[in-house]
Length: 572
Image (cartoon, rainbow, N blue to C red; front, side, top):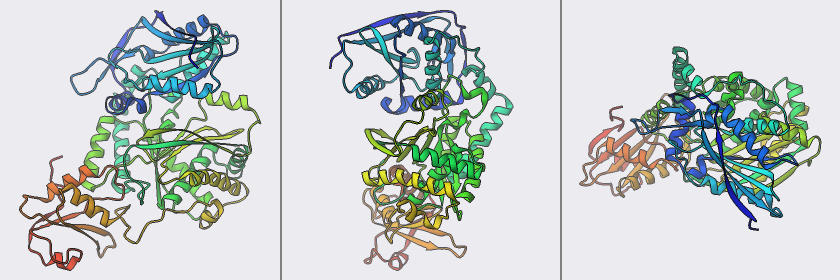
């Protein structure tokens, strides 16, 4: 159905304070992503329902108030001397536009229609140096706003900030006044981060992350079928009163916070399904746990990286471990993004790995919009309902948004269909509810996890082994290295050392090529993204020609060695 009328309203604002200064760590992180990633992935959006009887001028006036109130919405990022802007400028006055899409009758599939509006607006990269931070469309019915579709630059806001804006917009439309601002502004946060204490926190975060990236699994999902970097992930939504009741009872029985209980259950099942002893998961909203950041309209979107050792006999034991591990991750979620990625590049080159952000757990259930939605739903809702939505291409294999934990457990999960076919994805979420229901009654021994939940660990062939904390396939390493070296013959062995550590060695028949271990390692490192079952060898042995028995290690050992080394000799 086509809109009856589409027109653009230019909105003037004034009354703010002009300021400028350095960007925050969170802004620098997002600016880097905006300049690099597909706009449809990095731009964000939300849809706000306008109260019945809202007038168009009132909806626009409320938006104007928010723009004057929040510096982030009046901020642009002028080009700097480096590759990315390093300064932010806050305007005292200016203008923005609102697109009004008016209908005589709303389309029957209103939700799909507004998502399409949002997706079209998300497809274009924000011009950081000049563009207003929000692209706003008001969907109206005979002139009265019904929905606001808000697409945002991730350099200005994150999902939590959009929820704060929605909450304040609705407050203004209800005729109420907003309380004085107490949350820190982006410029004030940047000043805090530049203090000696702020710099120490950033360095401590880098050391914490480096330990995980140097020793933890390079990818949570390293198994047949896990390939590629950007994956098309369908959305599966769980809405369950049973799950919410069980979650509340587990929290009451154990004394744990419901959010920690749910995170523990999720990590236990993800690690069980992936066949891993450690669950490494990115937790984006955790960096708002400080009161001064809780309602900040800003992008404080930096991951907390949780590393949870799931080798525990039962759920209650793991829950106690998860509490401390989560707090430790939260404390180390503020960092210099440029320094972080430099560290990741250096560490993975030395280790011979590729850091994969495979699992993302985003709990937004405490944000204002989701709390309001939960209150409105009351006790209504299904015992257990699963529904499929549209797919989105993302650089991850498992992403979950926790929208509500009471009175409904409401989760939106996106998972790689190569690893989670439709029936297994549905089984994973129903298995989560079953685990919570069992833990509500008593502690759950993890020896019964498959039988209880129906979730089975990954199936790997005999050619897979755990090396340096990661699942790898030596034949896949040989194939990847050969392809990276334009088809040179490669043989990879897995040798057990006396201290118990297994080590990969690659034999390469260079023929007449001037190959060195350093060149071999650099070529393989370039080929690692999208191959989670491949880890670089610790030793490269270069010979002239392959032996007649090219699949037998003893034959390769008899060849004259031209050169050998670990290949990590590049200057850092």
